Length: 325
Ligand SMILES: NC(=O)c1ccc[n+]([C@@H]2O[C@H](COP(=O)([O-])OP(=O)(O)OC[C@H]3O[C@@H](n4cnc5c(N)ncnc54)[C@H](OP(=O)(O)O)[C@@H]3O)[C@@H](O)[C@H]2O)c1
Image (cartoon, rainbow, N blue to C red; front, side):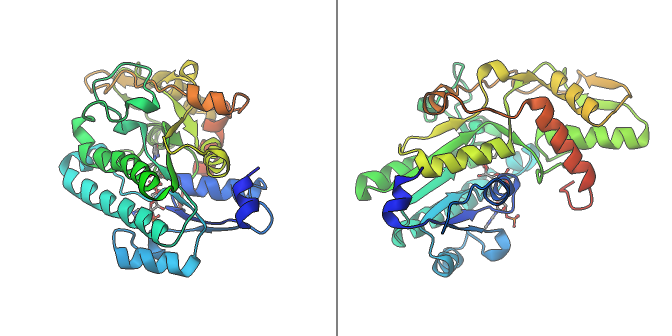
């Protein structure tokens, strides 16, 4: 693994956003699954180590750790309502965070940066399955256009750093991530984690679970630990500048109804599940293709969804006091 590492000595990897859902998963893989090679150093940052919106603080944190490699996860993220209200803040803060991280990495001679995009930045009007070549093919959904355009610019900037300086800065595009350390807030959290919290509360209160919409929309969910393993692979092995979708296959898409049933099973919830069809379903599907990833890693095994949901529910119950609810 990693010819780059042998050539340049052991990596010193700085992970921005290291305290979030994806960052904690990478930390777990590095520390608990022997993801760290001999001599390597991995540094996981939170916003307390420096506000990356600020260029001075970004430089200070890079000066302190002198990374050779960067996994860039930090982003200003929020729920749908906040995005709709504050597109300007999401646009400006994320443009600043991304430019500060990439330009400081360039100035300090960082060999490789892997940044995190999101499948929600794809064009709103598109054909399915979506693939990596379609990012810039049309405007993103109106609700989060600020966040989406800022994220799309990472891809543009990566190509420009390669053209002008030959840097191998690239990006990965995960679909819906879930796992320990997610945001489980019922209003602002990601769909699966919000449903875990809802079901947990319903069980405690002896009430039914009310799911927004019909339960028919289908999504590709990726367990954060699988994503962590894939991001580490991308850091070590993926040489392209063009981004790569990190997702389960199209055949592994499940309906929200199926996901709720798995959650109910995992939490041993025996009450009723109602689907409130007066509420919007959102997009019925946003299927992304993982064909490019499959060409690189035909044998990668994903944790079965049922198992991953069970592990996430167990973590949530055991860590309710520290979980973001
Ligand atoms: N979750 C998903 O479903 C999903 C899907 C596709 C892509 N992604 C992308 O994956 C990346 C990680 O997402 P996540 O779900 O792990 O997010 P998360 O759990 O909300 O974590 C966000 C991380 O960014 C840090 N951060 C935020 N603002 C910062 C600032 N101004 N300066 C320094 N650090 C800052 C946070 O630090 P604190 O803990 O100190 O606040 C935290 O470590 C993001 O780029 C996101 O766009 C996520």
